[in-house]
Structures are given as structure tokens and as C-alpha cells.
Amino acid sequence: MKNNVLITGGAGFIGSNLVLRLLDLGCSVTVLDNLSPQIHGADPESSPLYMAIKDKVTFVKGDVENESDWQKALVGVDSVIHLAAETGTGQSMYQIKRYSDVNVGGSSIFLDFLANNPHGVSKMIIASSRSIYGEGKYHCFEHGEVYPVERNDEMLEKGDFEVKCPICQSNVKLLATDEKSKIHPSSIYGVTKQVQEQMFMITGKSLGIPTVSLRFQNVYGAGQSLSNPYTGILSIFSTRILNGNDINIFEDGLESRDFVYIDDVVESIVLSLFNKEADYQIFNVGSGVATDVMTVAATLKSIYKSNSSISVSGNYRVGDIRHNFADLSLINSKISFAAKIDFDAGMKLFTDWVAKQSVKEDLYEKSILELKSKGLYK
Ligand code: NAD
Image 1 (cartoon, rainbow, N blue to C red):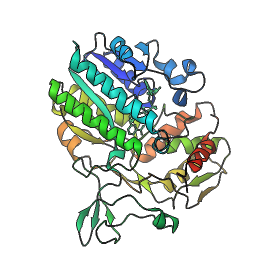
Image 2: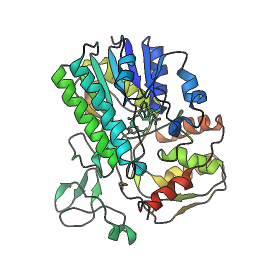
Image 3: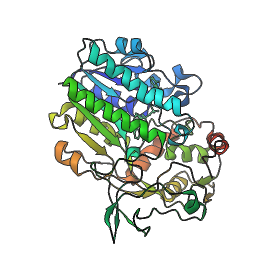
């Protein structure tokens, strides 16, 4: 039984939910988190996520880029769940150094510390991401299983949004992406998650520390930042609607993602932590269902009984993928994980939670202006 768990980024969305679940299971929890204002707002010490956990854990306010903060946080710890990261796909395309420093640099400082110092760590879990797949797996009637490359401006400007067979350019059918699918990220964020995962898996093996990588799909639910305009379309749409603003959907609205509810994600981490069958494995974590973005926006508009209009403008972001959903056979066979909360139930839980929060300032247009000024929104 792993009892003394360090969760980096434990004040964030996934982390704070995980903290409460591990405490329920009788673990002692240490959190290392810098309370980043992008997630926790201008007065991070009073953010609801931090308030919900701060008296229940050993809280180390610190940065994963500082070895001394890791050292403080690792005292008495037997397991590390590394969640702290910069997480915005679009933002990563113009804050390349920051994303690399935090995600890759932070991981390297920790792993280097383990390799060169006495420590008690006997299990590690790294939060990876579906973004490492870029465009996932597809079927071409002529060429079988294929991995489409990033779409080019010429296609996207014409409104031709669907990916094509990389060999014959014909239309292809979306398949569930499994863990053996090609890794070819199309964003800097995706590159940093790929490198983080590889660094953890390689170092875990070389030091004999059982390590698990979890490739999360799009996680949503209670605790998601409602003020961060850089990531999380459910919260971005919710904040726009609740401010009375209209929603402009990228591309044609038919791009899809695999939305997985936070409770299912927390369960996947708990199963991976306590189950030896998970050791040295890399798992997809998702719902296994693709849902298009138009459906997400329309469902939120209907639940909030909003008059906001929803339009599709044909605009697109450089680095975005068209579709992705997870094949969950491996995690199901090894540790019996299956998502329990479907899209309708999850949307109800999420919007019930949003209704209890204060309405946040809508910073979305500012984030789009940033992307435009860098030539990353067209
Ligand atoms: P989040 O932004 O809600 O939480 C991240 C936490 O890390 C925040 O509390 C932040 O203050 C902290 N943090 C950021 N930079 C830090 C630093 N330099 N030092 C210390 N703490 C720092 O993110 P989340 O949604 O909970 O995601 C957690 C992990 O899961 C991340 O690694 C992310 O890449 C991965 N992931 C998330 C999703 C998703 O849909 N939420 C999908 C795929 C992968």
C-alpha cells in the first residue's frame, strides 16, 4: 500500500480532486504547487481549489523548476504523481521556452534528483496526454491503417477541415487511437508531454522504480478552472455563456474530442497507483467516445437556458487536431478501468457545479487576440 503520496500540481483541477480521493483512502498527501495565477487567479491563496485542500495536506508552495522545492516536498514520500504542468495547446505555440522549462525542465530536475540522491520513492505516475498522438489513427480504404499529417493552411482556408490519407489524399475513417498508435504531436505542448512521458518511463526503468504513464483525453468536471481562457472548452464556453457572450466555434464545429469526467480520471490514477499490473505500463485514459464541439456548445446552451448565439466561423488555430478518441482495451484488460460517467451525466454534474461558482471574467477574447498577433489564429 502506498501511503505517503506527493502530488505535484495538487492544487489544480485533476490534482485537487485526486487529493480528496486519496485522503478518503487513508493516504497522507503532500502537494507541491506554485499556485500559478493563470489557474488560480490574481489572489491564488484564496482560490477555491487551494482552499479545499490546504488544511488537509502538507502544502509546499514551490516550483517544479527548483530542486530545493522538490527536496522539501519529497520528505517521507513513497509515491509521486506528477501533474504540475503548463497545459494550453495554443499558448504553447508562442511560449515555447516557458512550456519547455516547466514541463520538460521540471521533470528533468526531479528525475536527476532521484538518480543522484537517497530517496524513498517506489512508484511514479506521470500525467501524459492524448496530444502526443497529434492526429490519431484512421482507416484508408486503399491503404489500411494510416496516420494523417497536420492539415495545411491551403486546405483549412478552403474550409476543407477533414484529414486525408497521407499516401493518396483521399478521405479517411476515424478509428480509436490505441497506445501503439504513432506518436506525432502537432503542438509544442504535445512535444513536452511526449518528452515528459519518455523521460519518466526510461528513468523509472533504469532506477527500478515502477512507473505508469497515463495519456489523458479531454478531462472535464467540477474543479476545472473557469477563468483560464487557454484550455478546457467546457469551461471556456460556460464562462462565455454566463457572461452573456456569444460562442464562435472553430472550423465547422464537427471537430471532435473524447471528453472524460474527472471522477473517472481520478479512478484511473488510483487504480494505477495501487495495482502492480499497472507498473511500467502506458495507458490511454478517456471515455472511448468522440463528441463533436458543436454538440458540446449546444448542450451547454440548452442546460444554461442561454440566449447566446453559437456560430461556426471557419476560423482555425495552428496546431489543433481534427479528431481523437481513445481505445481503452489495454487499461481495461490490465487494471479493469472503464469510464462510468457518460457525456450526459457528466454535463449535468459539471453544470450543477458551475452554477455554484461565481461568474468569472471572460478572458477568451484576449487569448484569441494573442493568438492572432502571433499568426496562430486564422
Ligand atoms: P491545472 O492547470 O488545473 O493544474 C496544474 C497545477 O499545476 C496548477 O495548480 C498550477 O498552479 C500547478 N503548476 C503549474 N506550473 C507549476 C510549476 N512550475 N510548479 C509547480 N506547480 C505548477 O491542470 P490539470 O488539468 O489538473 O492537468 C494536470 C496534468 O494533467 C497536467 O500535466 C496536464 O498536462 C495533464 N493533462 C490534463 C488534461 C485535461 O484535460 N485537464 C488532459 C491531458 C493531460
